[in-house]
Each structure stands twice: as structure tokens, then as C-alpha cells.
Length: 353
Image 1 (cartoon, one colour):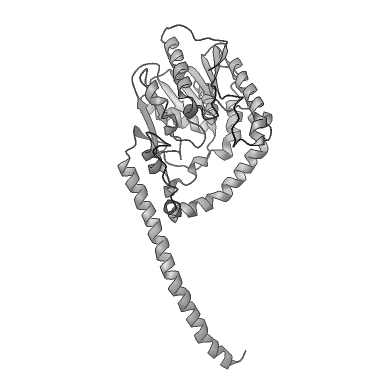
Image 2 (cartoon, rainbow, N blue to C red):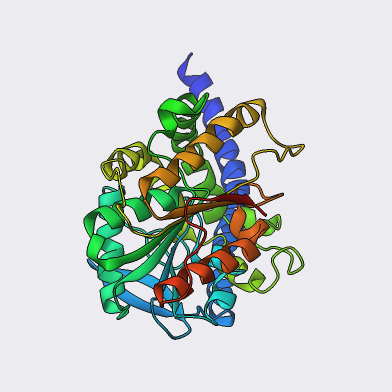
């Protein structure tokens, strides 16, 4: 190219850059406006949906706990993986008519601040122990865990056996599930890979305000009766994008840790399980193949204590606290009554209700 050609091309390049700049400027302003709008709406939702319960500082981070009712023994509720305290919205209000009941948010869930570092069962249990101290929850108490929460309950009983009066496992994960459930290990590795890939995509959608713009930051009050406002307030917060997935990479470690407890001795144990005969249209072939193995693992949980009983919640899937809260409330009231000196539950039995 000659000097003359270069001189002729320079005005064209400058014009093109100016056109790009003119188009890019408004786009950046729109993106900034959407991002600020999302921040403002998240703040507004929080202000208009006060969080029930209390906040305490545990190892430098704020944690949320909601205790209701009066009485002893207290009940501590441990939610499933990625689930906030509001998972217990159908259980806690009714159960708190009988005794004090506490639900809480693990780090990065619900209203508890996210934190970096190890998120295995040992870490989670020690944070819970400190939180319960600060919330002045009397020991010993009944501790109940749903799904992955059952692994953390098991580890709590291993580390602090004198603090536990009874255990409730609600369709609990098993320490052996990675080796026993068909396809479980492959699915777990795939979930970990997907989580890494999806993190930045999810952050971009939330931080940019796009998720709120297309209506993915709110739910119907009909579908979430009683806590739709809290769900909306928790959704699309820039600082909490996928932080409820922080335990995923450590869950196999958590299973190994909890598996060190092989017996509750004679501690009362209630096992509540999903309906193994339930089939839903959205169930994958892998999940259907896992059903009988999961059912055997649930039955095996009874052997961990000499004073245990099991109830299969008819027509319930894995989300028993949502599908059959009545079963949880009734059976836990039996356990509470027994620990208060009442008649014993049907130890040794398995029933379907």
C-alpha cells in the first residue's frame, strides 16, 4: 500500500470507529441502567419483605436463623442442597405449636452470606454449632435433615452426640450413594462440570439485569403460598449468584465424613422416605433405575439405631417437606411426645401412609 492509499483509508477507518462508538455508547448505557435497575429492585424487594428470625456473625460472616415457638426439646431443621430455610414453610409453623423449632440458612443460601473455602460437612456442622450457641438453642435437641441435609445431620450427631436427643432423616442422602445408585457418580461429575460452565453465564444474566427483565426473578403467589415475597426478595441478587451451589464440589467428601458414624446406638431415629412406587412424567430413566436402590438405602437407615422406625410417605417424591408435610409433622410430634415421657413410637416398624 502506498502512502497515498494509507492517507485515503485513514478517514474511512476514523469514520467507522466513530460509528462503532456511537452505537456502543448507548448499548453500554442501557446495560448499566439495567444493572442498576436490578440492584435497586433487589434492594426494594428486601425492604418490603422483612426476613423473619435473627442474624448472627459466625467466623466473620452473617448467618440467618429463624426460631419459632416454645418448649423442649427444640427441633433444628437442616434443608436440602441449594435450599433456603423457607423449604420448611409448610412444616415449621405447625410444628412450632408443639415446641421451639429453628430453621436456618447455610452460607450462600437464603439470607446467610456466601463465603469461600471448604464447604464440607465438618465445616458446615461447626458453623451450625456456633450459630445455635449464639441463638441460645438449648441442648439436647432433635435435629432433622432433608436430602443432603441428612448427611450434615449425621455429621452433627457424630461430632456432638451429647447435644442430640433424636434424629430425623427425611429422604436423606446416603454416605454410600455414589457407589450404589446407578449412574450417580457420572451424574455428579457432570453436575460439577456444568456448574463451572454455567456460573459465569448465570452471573452475566443476573448482573446485567437480563433475568429480571425477562421475568425470571419472581414467582406466582399461587404456586408459592405464604412465601412468594421472600422468594422474590432472594432472587437475582448479584452477590448470591449460584452461591447455593458452593457445597457441590465437596459433597462426596461430606458423605465420607458423615459415613464415619456407623451407629446412633439407642438414640431415637425417625426415617421418612419418598414413595418408591411413584412415577412422574418428568422422571428420567436414570432416576427410575435408582428408585429401588434408594429405597433399600432408606430401609438400611433404620439399622443405624436400635430405636428407629420408618414411614413411607405415599404419593410423595423427593421433596417430602412440600409433598407430604403432614407426615413429617405427625411423626415428629410422636418423637417429641416420647422424649417428653409419652408413649413410644412404633420402633422397629415400617409403615406406608
